[in-house]
Image (cartoon, rainbow, N blue to C red):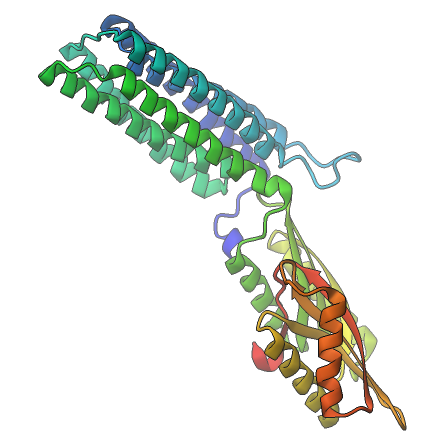
Length: 387
């Protein structure tokens, strides 16, 4: 499964994350120092802005290193799902710091533009700037590799932020060359451009770190892999209502309804469900499965299931049904089922029930639909012949 390709222990993940944070602190403080000197010598607000950006990155690295140590803390009574989401909270704090920094640097750059302050660039200044680009590019690659290895959102974001720094420093170098060759002072404008880069990066990071905290929809490919894995077990006839929650890397919780034949002994079906749950635990997913006995052997029930499925999918292709049962009577038969409805679906539950009921009555008035609307984010429902 996708999330198991880089399976790594919590302790090793914390060690590599902390190491990345320490590396970021050292590199960014070094870059801040040499760029600050270069900015003061040249009088360039753009270089000073770039240096300040490196200082904020050092602060980011400090918070990242601390968060990895806190995230490895074991679950306790107050936090039964562990503390891995601390990494997202740390990233959110850093994101707000970056945004505030971008605003302040933009203000400073505007003042420089208004005052027409001149800057002086020497060969040493160019060497410092080009060296910083190379160092920051190497740091971005380092973050990227470690981030992929330990599946870290914060390190992936740090890699993106470092690449933005490479771009912003590159803009400063180009501006310095233009000023050197033409005499036009565009330093203030470049400082404003760097500040905007910082501001945009901070806003993007806010979104990236708040999404998992708010409960973003899981990766569709990962959801499909889990569904396919469940359907691969002999004895599983179908599944629905697969819900996945992430509490940080390596801490995935899921629940699902699994359909089995109602003709099989209950203990045999229960053992199947236990085996599936245990197998997923070994793969890093705490799965809770609900057993749903269904009848796929009765031709009439299968026909009615097919017709009802056609009805709801003709209304909207995103609709689906599950838990379909038929209670036959002499004059009236109940068709009992749930309808999966996307959360953004425009019709109300009552409107949809009315519409489906009217369509079923077109088949025969003897059928009385008993419908439960299951509204939520995209859910996967499968039966064996559709898998």
